[in-house]
Length: 110
Length: 114
Image (cartoon, rainbow over all chains, first blue to last red; front, side, top):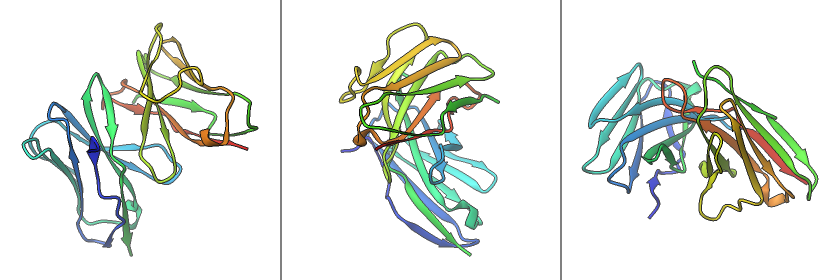
C-alpha cells in the first residue's frame, strides 16, 4: 500500500464548478497535510496546509481533514481554466519529511 | 518570504559526465535541505535529506555514491549527479524547511542525459 494515494485523473470540470480532490494516507501518526499545485515543468506551489480535523478555508479553496478515516480533500470553488494543473497531496510523516501522492490532474474547461 | 534559488533550471549533458545542481536560500538559513526527483507523470520522490555540516541521509534505493550531496553552509546545498546516464534524466527539486509555511521549494532542474 502506497503511503499517500490519489486518483491520477484527469478530473474534468466545467468553468465555475466545484472541483473535489481526494487523498488518503496510511500513516496514522501523520501530523500535517499539504496541498500543492504543480504546473507542467514547474516546481510545486503551496495552496493550503491543514493540521486539525475539520475544514480550513482560504478564498476559493477548502481543505478537509478526517484523521479517523485518514482522508484529506481539497475543494476548489468557482473553478477557473487557470486552475488546470496537477494537484499533489503531501503528508508530513515525521522528521519533517514530506511524502507526496502521485497527484491528480485537474482540467477545467471554459 | 523565503526564497530558494535553484540553478541551473535545465541542463543537457553527455552520458558519463557529472552535473552539479545548486540550491541557495536567499533570505534565511536552511538548516535542512531535501532533494527530490520527479520522473514524467510521477510524483516527487525524496532522494535524500541533508543537514548543514553533516552527511546526507539517503532514502532506500538511492545510490549515495552517484548522487553526492554537499551542505557545507546554511545557505547552500548542492547535488552532484556523477557519471550520469540517460536513466538519470529527470526533474530534480530541492526543498527546505525554512519559510513561514514550513517548506520552500526551489524552481527545479530539468536534467537530460544524452
